[in-house]
Image 1 (tube, protein in one colour):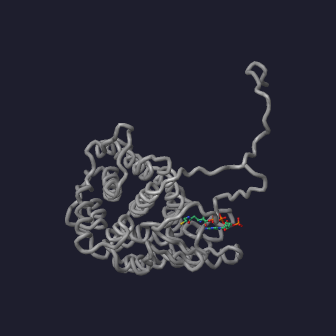
Image 2: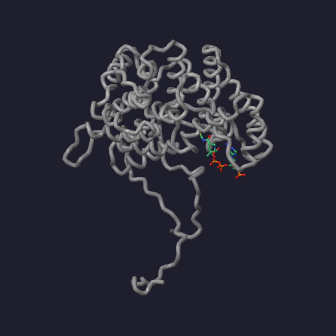
Length: 384
Ligand code: COA
């Protein structure tokens, strides 16, 4: 590597590719999918419309949306051996481990060519979008000792997810909450998990391998795991007046406030206001305003105290912050939050994989070497 090469730990500010799928404008807090602002999409477009937009390049007509929904419906059910496999997994298994394993297992039921490759096309993308929610709902029931519930062709993707967990058709407000959550999570440019999917696809591995890699990358709490950590914090806080002390204690112990801060945004994450509005609506709807009230106060205190402690870094609520009260109010267990994130983001991951494959070049960066200089090999009997 040439001398003077700059090493960017974490690739901050480094442009590694191009995409037409979404644009994150971190300084002004704007997120667009193929030119459509999420502020317009969140209240008006369904997840199915947004997934169609990402995969096909345009918002669907009524007839196109109908066909898209029919294809999703036809691909929602899981191969029986994968349901049986989940039934044999320890009930204590972490949901993200189960999701990653079963998504990888989907490839076993798809034909391969003579080189062992699966077709990576828009239909395999729809297959993955359809099935992730079914896997999560099935695992949720299996680990509670219940039988999985088959999806219903007449329900939306969001309603199906809630129905397959509980056996009850959700209320409109609950369906809308999950639908908008999926819309808001559908894509976010070259975030870590999407980049991981693109790196995998760039080796000409197929879409199943690429999405499996993306799920693995989403797991950590600097990425998709933050919503569960944020929920754990809200449980520990217990009531709004304890939020300030909690924030000070966390920072004193050198810990980060989960759900706060972002690599790209220097203002509040544009998705947070939509999720906050949903959290507010849900808290009134279900008669328990606890999670929303704690989240509001935790955000206020975190923002104020972090501005004092880290004056050089603008730290505001990110997408995971208000995910916690939204999903808690829908009675989703905290350890499934990251899986829900995956159920929305799979639309973006698969669109990115197809975009990568359409104009592929192997992604292979360099590293500076900081180990010992070249030296003689020491035979084993002479080693001390
Ligand atoms: N709580 C406390 N301090 C935070 C913070 C948080 N949530 N987020 C950033 N900071 C501080 C860091 O400690 C660091 O301070 P220092 O310079 O004194 O060491 C400074 O801000 C810059 O942090 P850095 O880790 O370089 O920024 P980044 O761009 O890598 O951070 C995140 C982005 C998301 C990793 C970071 O904000 C974070 O860890 N947030 C909590 C986890 C989370 O919510 N993740 C989901 C992201 S959508």
